[in-house]
Amino acid sequence: MLKHRTSVNRTSVICTGLLLFLLLLTSCGSSPSTASATPTPKPNLAPTHYTSRVYYQGTSKPDDLVFDLQGRILFSDGYHGTVGRINADGTVTILASGLQRPEGLVVLPDGTLIIAEQKPNRILSLAPGAHSVTVLRQLPGSTGSGSCKNGTNGITYDAANQTILVPDSPTGNLYSLSTDGKTLTQLVTGMNNPDSAVADSQGNIYIDVECGGSIWRLDTSGKITRYGGFGMLDDIIFDPHGNLLLTDVSPSVHGLIRFNLVTGQRVILASQGYEKPEGLLVDARDDIYLADDDIGKVVEYIPA
Image (cartoon, rainbow, N blue to C red; front, side, top):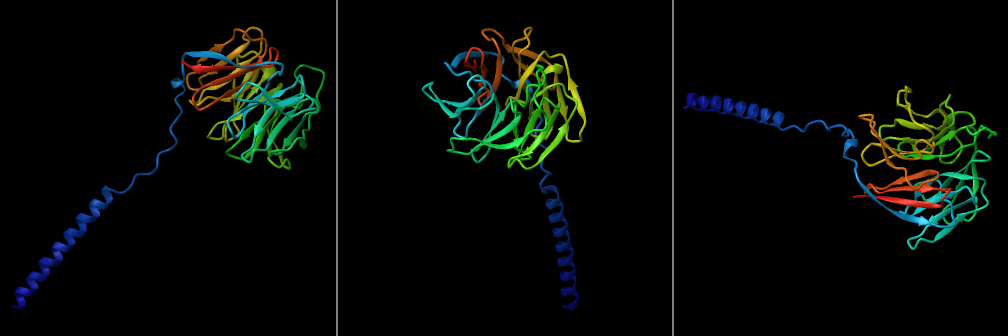
C-alpha cells in the first residue's frame, strides 16, 4: 500500500509540473504586445476638389484668423486696428480696437486671446470678457522702414509645450513665449523676415521665411532643414492629413498652396479672385478658410 501511494504521488507531481509548464507557455503566447507608435500621417489623403463660398465680405478687412473655443472665427484687421468675430448671421462683433496693426492671433485653452501687435512689435493679451488689452511682452526687435522688418506677425500656440511661437522679423529670430509672458526663449536665428510658424505633433517646428522664399524646419534635435522655391509666404498651418497649407502673396503665385512634406509635391489650390491672400484656417472636416484683407473677405473651401 505504501508503494502504491508513492507511485500515485509521483504521478501527481509529474502531472502538476506538466500543467504548470503548459500554463507558462500559454501565458507567454498571450502576453500583450508593446504599444505601437503614432501612425505616420498620410498627406496624400487630402481632398483633391473643393467648392467655394464667400463666408464673409464687408467693411472689415480680415487678416489673420483663429477659431475661438466655440468654433467661431476671430480675425485681426490691421487697416482698422481691431480684432473682430464673425457671427453666424455674417455680422461682426468688435472685441478689441485702437490697436497698432494687429496681426497673428492665438486663443489659449482658458479663452484668453493673444494678439501680435506689429507696429510696436509686442504681444498683447485680452482676457475672456474683457474690453481692453494688456501688454504681455515687448519683443526685442524694433520695426524698420524696410519691407522685411515690419514686426511680429503670425503667432501660434504650441500645445505640446504650452507656449506661444513668436516670429520676430526685425531680429530674424523665432521665439517661444510662455503664456504668462515672463519667459522668452530664442529657438532660431538668421532668418530674413520670419512671418509665421507652426509645430507638428512630434515637436518639429516649421517657419515660413517671407523674404527668403523658404520654409525652415527645426527638428527636436535642433537641426534645420530648408525648403526653398517659394515666393513670399505669409501664413502656414497644418491640414488634418499632415500637409502644410501656405499663403503666398508674391505676384507670380498669389494664392493658397498645399505642400506635401512626404512627396514634396506643391499644389496651388486657389489663386483667382484675390488681391492679397493671407490668413488661413482649416477645420477637422477639411474646410479651408482664406482671408484677403485688401478686398475684405473670407472664402470657405469645402471638399467636393
